[in-house]
Length: 85
Image 1 (cartoon, rainbow, N blue to C red):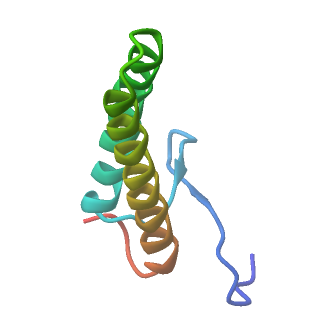
Image 2 (cartoon, rainbow, N blue to C red):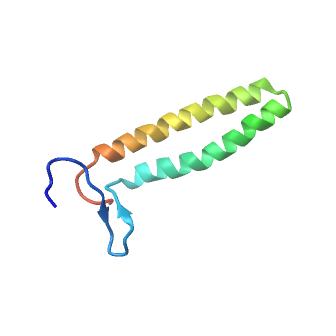
């Protein structure tokens, strides 16, 4: 397989996809997705309870979390050298 500068996905011996990533980026993505579940629940509860402040805080925190996850994915894609470590 020739490398013309494009990113390509490698496979582990067990067949799992491997991408270069730092542990920090992986934590940001996984914890961020976990937090989003709870923020969604708080937003729905705020709507049901007619608590606009609670809903607003959950929505703003959700937007911040999504931005952090997007930045972590970008850092992960830009980090092309080596393996996770």
